[in-house]
Length: 174
Image (cartoon, rainbow, N blue to C red; front, side):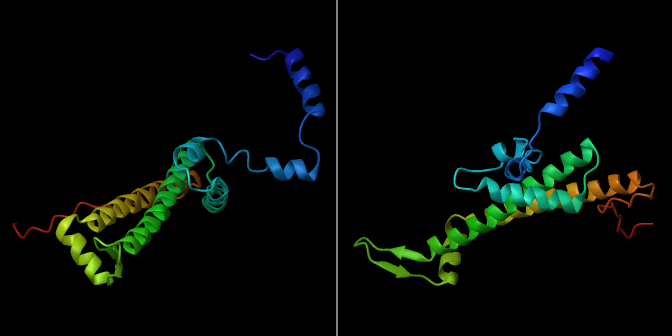
């Protein structure tokens, strides 16, 4: 329990501190967005933190989380969105790499996309694995987004929409 003396001291200290200049305000304006979870866990070494911070800012502005659980869901959406972008970049890099064929002399022959895919599907199926990874990420985005929409609807006093996954029996037995 905070005493009256502590409250008064806190008020006096608050008057002294804080960022005053426009330059300082520009530097600290994203501090709340850089809480560490996303910037430390989602970023890889060659990725720009400023790009992730920008994505965080845009999605938080658009999705407007108002509670801790809503914030957790928005963070999940952001992390998966970032991973989906990475997967798309990986796919492009894989295709570019697989379209090059080097012989034993070091000569590089350009393969067609069909040749690259045919070889991969026959040998490693890395594209199939990547597509499954992308699908899993997308499912995570939609799952968190739908739950966020349900929670926000309930908070506004609206009837939350039904979950999108519905168990349907299509058997013909009566």
